[in-house]
Image (cartoon, rainbow, N blue to C red):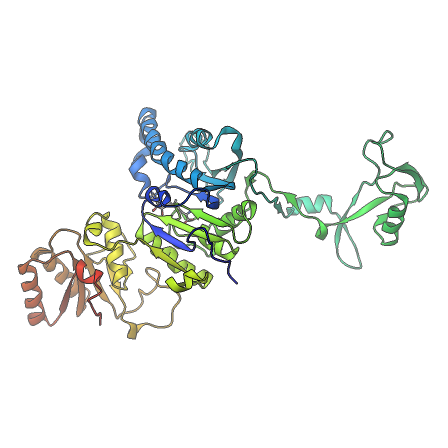
Length: 491
Ligand SMILES: C[S@@+](CC[C@H](N)C(=O)[O-])C[C@H]1O[C@@H](n2cnc3c(N)ncnc32)[C@H](O)[C@@H]1O
C-alpha cells in the first residue's frame, strides 16, 4: 500500500538539476520534512570546494574554501526554509570540515531559537582516521543539525532498545514460568516521609508507608501477581517487565546504526547513508503521507525510507548518474514503477529534467557524460574508473544474459559475450581515436564494438569501413544526436 499523492505539489518525483533552480519552482510552505546531506567529503563535487589536497592546506586557504562552501549553501538553505511548512523540520547532515560554520549559517536562516538538536551519528565503519604519527584524534562522527520552522513543529519521541549490560544490571530477575525478565520497582510515594499531597498512607503486607497507589489499586496489582515482597517485612515492590518497557528515550548520540557496507545496502556510492538512519529521521519528524524532500539525494536513501514508511517524497540531484541509480533502487527495493501515469495515481514515480539536448550534454563533466552514454545504450560501466584500457562500458546482449539480480558493475565480468563501448566528449571523433579502439577490439578479441561521439570525421568513418572489410570486425559509430533521438537499434 502506498501513500496518497499530494494535492499541493507533485510528489514521487526525482528532479535532475541544480537544486537552487528546482527549489525556486516549488511553492512556499509545501513540505513537512527536509533532509540534506550536501557533498562535503571525498566526493567529486566536494573537490570543487576543498580540492584534493585539503588536509595539507593552510588555515587561511581552508577558511577561503569554507567561505565558498557556505556561500554556495546559503541560498539553497534559504530556499529550503521557504518551502518548509510551519510545522516542518529540517535536518542538515555534515561533518567537522564545516559543521560550525553551517550551524552559524542555519541560526541566521532559521533563527537561533529554532535550533532543536545536534545529533552525533557515530559512523561505525569509520575506523579512526588518526593514523600512526598523526597528531589528532580519530574523526568518527558526523553532525546532523535539526531545526524547526516554528515552535509548532511535529515531533515523535522514539526509544532505543536497552543494551545488554543495562538489561543484565536492571532486569536481573527472570520469571521461571514464563522466562520474562523483570525489575522490581519502587512503589513508595516520591518524597519519602513527606510526600507531595495526594499520596495515600496505609499498611500493606505488614509495611506501613506513603504509597504511590490507592489501597484498591495496590490490592488489584497484588492479585495480578505484580506486587512482590521478597521476604517478610521487606517493602513490597512492583514487577516491571522488560518486554513492556518502551526502551531508553532516544538521545542525541546515535551509535547504534551500522554502516551501509555491513547491511547489504551498499550501491558503491561513496557517500551513501544507511537506510536505518534516514528511517529514524523520518519517524522523528514526519507521519504517514507527509511530504519529505531531499535536495541532495545521491542514491536516494531518504526517498527509499520515505516510500517504505508511506510518506510522499521529492528528490533532487544534479547528477544524472545519481538520478538513474536511485530510480533503479526505487524499482528494486520498493517495487515502484517508473511511469508517468502511475505516478499521478500514487503508484509510480518519475525522473524529470534529465538532459535532453546535445548542448546540455556537451557541458557535462566527462565522467557524467560517459555514464550517460553507457546507460543510454543499455550498457554497464567499466568496473575501473582508472586504467580502463580504452573501454568505458560493455553491452551484454540480451541473448547471452543469464537470470541475474541488478546490473551492477563487474557483476557480469564472467560472461564472455559482450561488446565494448568507447565514449569521447570531444567535438569530433577522429582517425586516431578509432585506431586506438581497433587495438582494444583486437586485444579483447571482440567482433563488435560501439563508439559514441558528437561527430565523426570523414577519416574516422573511412577507417571504420576499412577495419570492417580487412578484419571482419565492426565498430558502430553512434552520435549523441542519434542516441537522444533513439534512432539506434542495438543488436
Ligand atoms: C553526499 S551525497 C548524498 C548521499 C545521500 N544522502 C545518500 O544516502 O545516498 C550528495 C549529493 O548531492 C548532489 N549535489 C551536489 N550539488 C548539488 C546541487 N547543487 N543540486 C542538487 N544536487 C547536488 C551530488 O550529486 C551528490 O549525489
